[in-house]
Image 1 (tube, rainbow, N blue to C red):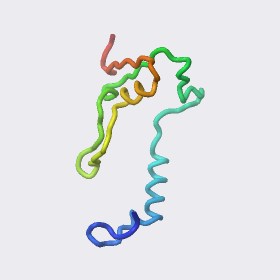
Image 2: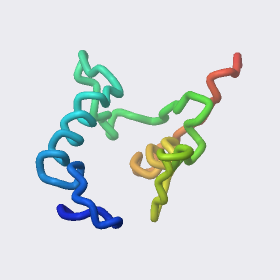
Image 3: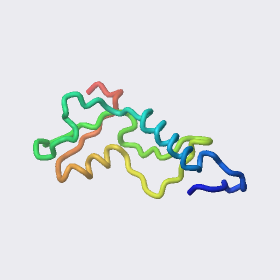
Image 4: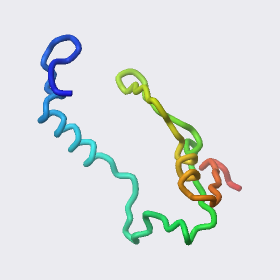
Length: 100
């Protein structure tokens, strides 16, 4: 995808060096979990149920606003993705605000 931007200007972000810098920034800036005890990936054979906890775990959020807008061709919530990958085991959802 290197080359001029839609307005005809040469966009440095579309050049190999710019793309490499963007990838490096994304990789270094994305920290989801620590895996100190080597529990990930989860062993499906040892699981019966999984709790997915958090106010947005069952929501599909595919875009931000303004310059963060992304139009996706497919989307899935964390809950759906985890449930689909469990191979018949149950995934339960609880919002973080709940005290139950």
